[in-house]
Amino acid sequence: MKAVRIVITGGAGFIGSHLVRRWLNEKNEIIVVDNFITGRPENLPAAGNGRLTVMRYDCCNFLYIDGHVDYVAHFASPASPVDYMRHPIETLLVNSLGTWRTLGLARAKGAKYILASTSEVYGDPLVSPQSEYYWGNVNPVGVRSVYDEAKRFAEALVMAYHRQHGLSTRIARIFNTYGPGMRPDDGRVIPTFICQALRGEPLTVHGDGTQTRSFCYIDDLVDGIEKLMMADVHEPINLGNPNEVRIIDLANLIISLVGSKSKMVFKPLPEDDPKQRRPDITKAKQLLGWEPKVPLEEGLKWTVDYFKRLLSL
Ligand code: UDP
Image (cartoon, rainbow, N blue to C red):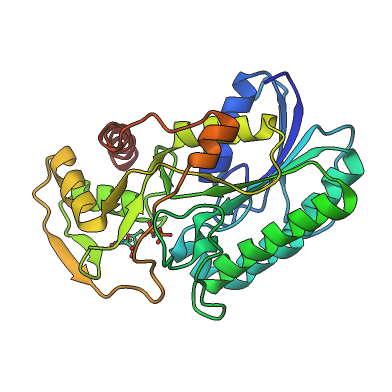
C-alpha cells in the first residue's frame, strides 16, 4: 500500500491491532481511536516511530482529527458473543452512532471508508454456504440481536452514505477469525478451548458440538482487508475461510495439537447459536483475487504457541 494516513477505531482490538502493525510496517501513519472496553493497550506496539497516535476515546461522540485522512476504518465493537452480551447497549451504540460519526469523519475529510461487518448479519443461516446474496435469518430481539441487528444497521448506513453522498465505502463481512492477540477470556471458542487444553481442564463444548464454523487465520484476513481497501468495491464482501468444521472436531484437534489429557464437558447450547456457518468467497476471489492460505492445523499451532507463552507469564 502507498503510505497513507489511516484513522482506525477499535485499533486496540484483536483484528484492529493486527491491522495497525501491518500498516505501520508499510510506513503508514495511524491514528487509533479506542475506548478499551474490550481492546487492550498492550495489543498496540509500544512505539510507532512517531507514526502511531493512540486516542482513548469513544467514537460514538464527535470525532475531531487534525489534518488530512486517507482512510477511516471502523473496527470498534465488542465482537465475541460473551463480550457483546456483557455490553449490549455499547454494542448497539458503537455500530449505530459510532458508524454515523466515523462516516461523518470520512465525509468531512474526503477519506475512503471501510466497515468491519460480520457473518452474524446472516444470523442462524438456512442456506449453506452463505453468499452475499443471502439476506439472513436473524432474530431481531434475541440475545445476539444487539450485535447482529447493529451490524445490519451499520451496513445500511454505510450504503446510504455511499448512495446519498457518493462516499467511497467498503463493507467486509468478516467470518470467524483467530490467531495470536486474542484474549484468553475473550469467550470465543478457539482461545477458550486452547486455554482449557493447556491447563488440563475439560473443554466446554456447547450443545452436542455438531454446530459448524469456518475459521480464518488472522494474517489471511488482514490480507483480505487490505485488498478490499485498495479495490473499488462498495457492495459487502465475505472474508473468511470456507473450511467448515464441527465444534466437536475442533475440540479433538486442539486436544491433540496441545498433547493434552483434557476431556470434554457438554454445556447447553446458547440461545440463537447458529447451527452452521461457512462463507461463499466467490466474490472475494473474483473481485479481490483473495483467498485464505493458512490451513487450520497450522494456524492453530501458532495460536497454541502464543497462548503457551501468555499463560506461562
Ligand atoms: N462454543 C463452545 N464452547 C465454548 C465457546 C464456544 O462450544 O466454550 C461454541 C459456540 O456455542 C458456537 C461456536 O463454539 O457454537 C463458536 O462460538 P464463538 O463464541 O467462537 O463465536 P460465534 O461464531 O458463535 O460468534
